Length: 223
Image (cartoon, rainbow, N blue to C red; front, side, top):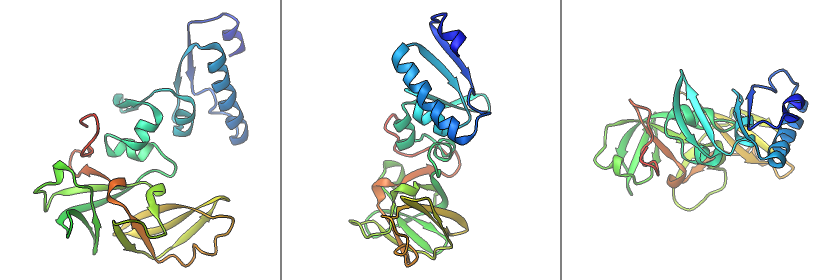
């Protein structure tokens, strides 16, 4: 990198430059590369399999699978509005929970039936008159609440495992037959987490994907 910098190139090409570094040094080098980019203002094309590197370093991300471009956008655009289940499962740590479901008619709008549980869904055009349609329900671990919110679904659960990460913890359970992870704040103590018996879901934070094409419904750019 040093030899390349002194030549004042118009473009930097990085091919997984941090892949052989340990975790601590990789974090330090990510920050240095970000500072370098801000200082030099040179366009950089950075190839990586590490979504954390992509999210922290990029102004725009091109996500590819099997040689095809799946989605292009700013990091938070990809996080908030994945176009398909591949992007939803790649961007985010932990990745988005994905549950196979069937659309049902709920009391206030469309709902998803997952095993013996019902989850209220956002009111999307694609879900009108869609009873019986197979879908994939996407819920980010950060978008599940252990305290009751406004509206939505209260989902009874049994916590199988709690991973303590310091300021936050990962709560593991199973919904239907699929593992389901929730990210919760610890507030310096995890004693309140062991007594959790239900999660709260808000429809506007749920993504719905077609069960066959795996494409998202209601994408801002048309999917």
